[in-house]
Length: 76
Picture 1 (tube, rainbow, N blue to C red):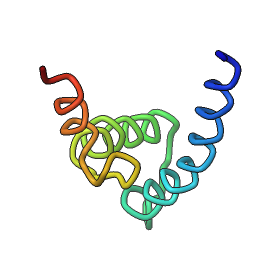
Picture 2: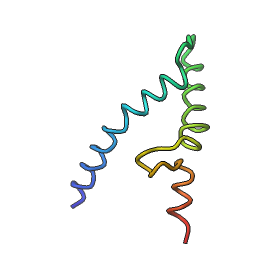
Picture 3: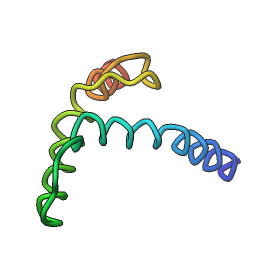
């Protein structure tokens, strides 16, 4: 049973990753010239933690932001 769950999760992630990287390229680094790895890390962190995980709506989460979805799933 556990192997089946892992396989479905991996398949689901494989389908979501191209959308994430497209959003990252278009919304975050389009036209930017990153000069150092530290600058790339900083921009990536800001995109993921300040925008992508907090406010951006995801079709896989019924068009809610991850924060909204988490609050909905954790509410009694």
